Length: 112
Length: 113
Image (cartoon, rainbow over all chains, first blue to last red; front, top):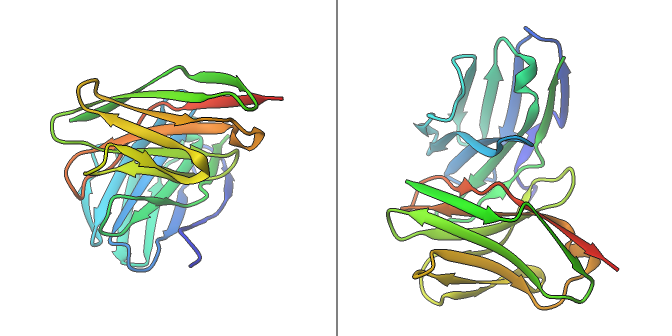
């Protein structure tokens, strides 16, 4: 089992550019979560999906953020346009029917 | 709604000493409670979880936690700290099945020799 795979591991981009973060959940896990981690705010839930359907996106900070899960094996988190305050580590996690998440290694985003 | 408070953003212990990381929760429904560990530049790894049943839960690496409903607490303990335990620890809560985890701010554990 390769675990939850996130790409890229690091992303440096200029303010105003579009950024796309990618996540491949563990096969058979029916829930997928996107979190953002910063020193100031800790781990914040952005959005989560059950069976590819968005359930709660109340944590998405602004309309600049969007997430999709076109199928059970792939999800994207897009920021357009990006701003320096979006700099953070973005984690994807997936979960089977029980309650334990498996986290990916994260994408460290720096917007300059 | 659920929330988690971790008391102490930083805990320091000596190698071999007791580790105690505190977590209090708030939940409008019977909670499911979790502890995760995060090593530098890595994702979070599940240490242990409480869903139902026995209130004393044993996890990996010698850690355990006890669910105390009357105190709304789920403190994490380990009898003897190792240098390799130095990391950041997160307590998390969720409500009914299918909902997302809400994390505390985290506690950084330092272990000195």
